[in-house]
Image (tube, rainbow, N blue to C red; front, side):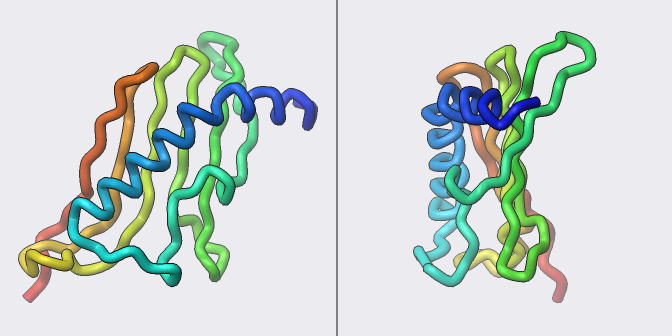
Length: 126
C-alpha cells in the first residue's frame, strides 16, 4: 500500500481513533492514576500505523502500535473498515486505590460511535 493511501485512511479514521484513545486514557484515570508525563499515554499521534488487508472482506484496516521509551510494545489499536475497533494499552502497575489488584492494562472497543472500555485487572500477590 502507498503512503498516500495510509495518510488518507488515517485522516478518515482520526476522529474515531482519537475518541478511542481518549477512552483508554479515561479508563486509566478512572482507576485513580494521577496524570503523569512519565508514563506512556495512548495518543493517536504516537501510534505507528500500517494498513492490513482483511482477508475475508477485502477491507483495508488500520493497525497501530504504541511503544514505550525502551522500544517495547505497550499497546495497540485496530480500526476496521466495517466500523468496528479495538484498542488496548498496558499500565503494568499496582492499582492506586485498591491494593487487592494489579492493573495489567485497559481496553476499549466498539462500533461506529459506541465505545466501551474496561480495565484488565489481576489479583495482587501478597
